[in-house]
Image (cartoon, rainbow, N blue to C red; front, side, top):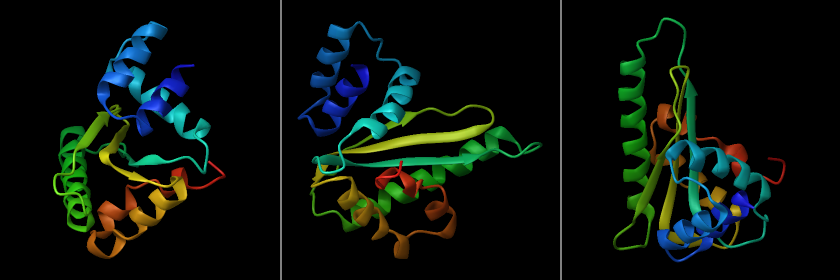
Length: 152
């Protein structure tokens, strides 16, 4: 039920819809809860349903790597992806919601373009693919492209 609520948010008009749905279900709106339910949601959203453009960004933090430095680098890559999305978007004022789900072993961020709705997850994947030429190899590498396929 919570996954359905989050899924409804991905195609709903505003954050208030998510808040109302989660309150009805008795769910805390903390980031960790949102992230785990969004992971579930990507598995339950219908492939042919309209959806807000979204990104699943992640990379493993290597043993011995400075975690603070890894997060700094990850944040820079996220900023690069957002800038590239704004470059190719036809929206005058693109609104991006960032959801953090990182640990000391893994950098993980989810982005949802709140006012950029596409026909389905495959179309979201095509939009993401259009970013490849303007992204650095590092930024392109942290995008989980599997979330746009039927085999997720």
